[in-house]
Length: 250
Image 1 (cartoon, rainbow, N blue to C red):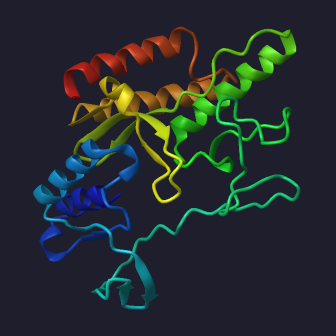
Image 2 (cartoon, rainbow, N blue to C red):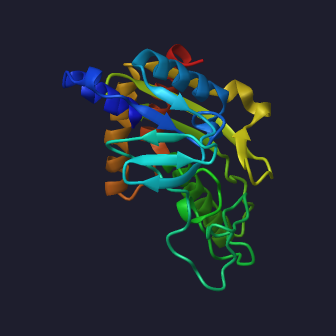
Image 3 (tube, rainbow, N blue to C red):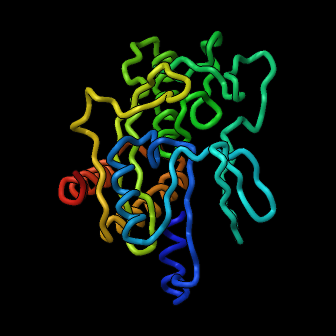
């Protein structure tokens, strides 16, 4: 979002009249997606003259400034903020974590204590709330129900490899990130060190094409009530993204 704002202001010819500051409580930018995303964002902020501040934990928001736990105060004219993640709906008699997200069994996304109830996507307790990962969880649930109905082995469990294209208006950033749970509540997710060869990040104007491809492909699949992650259409899309990543991402 901050990079899109920067690009938009440049196109309007007013970027030199606006100071942009980004603060985050995290120790690295987009911390869950590992050090390569942090490096990309750091370099982008430098090129775009954006002030980035890490490990800034908000204490209080006032009408004209934000006060942080480290004692710093930053004034603002316009504030765009993300609140901490908490569940929007609380379910009685279903186990939840401290933020209200439904506790699940990792491999098949079933609710703990309930073999025939599933919580794929943002309602569940997987730490990263992201569309592609939600789609993968939905696939997992469908595979589990299919295996149960046919009384066959369930083999295709949840594999949390995130794939996303982050729009910046002038270019885009591609990230493919294999993730794993850490068991540490302060940093519950990390890049899987055993699958580092699958960890790819790249920045290029050409990735905007990949974003547009996804924007055409996904609605088409959903309109026809078809899974996004299967069939000839997905294989073509996957081959295109992998081909681009081999050239435009490291």
